[in-house]
Image (cartoon, rainbow, N blue to C red; front, side):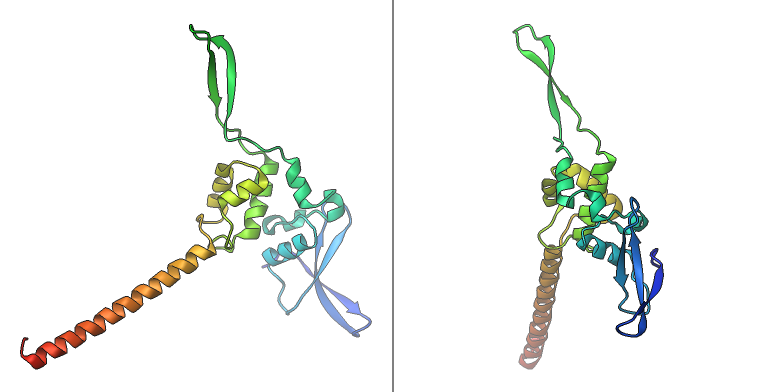
Length: 205
């Protein structure tokens, strides 16, 4: 069931009530009316997608914490750029030196993603994941490049909340290969039956 309540509004032009679901901004009084196309409320996933297309920041799991475009202070892409890109690992040169005069280097493990990083990664995956796979052309790697974050962060969030790192193109290729395999097996079976029939006529069996 959707977490977004339904509200009827009188339409003076059409002379009838029309049902809407409203997304409210958690930072101001702005609201986004989403007209219903059926008698059933839309699921939160669909409403969040519509809100994002209108410039809102919204996810299905936090639809009641949506933020309107005015409060975002710029498009989502600009907000992404505000997140400082993190390197998978940073090399730090220590003050000490080896006997031959060279510096001692230590590799520091990658930092953990911040709450803001996790939120942006989750929203990016949600937009490009169908429930079974990524939309064709998208992977953990493409999202990591787009957000300028380590691929490992994307992998962890995708594995926890979504599914495998595959896309629709791979699923389509797999389906075609399986279909071709079934055709080959069917032809082989027909050929085997013909061989058996001919051998019976020749008295071989």
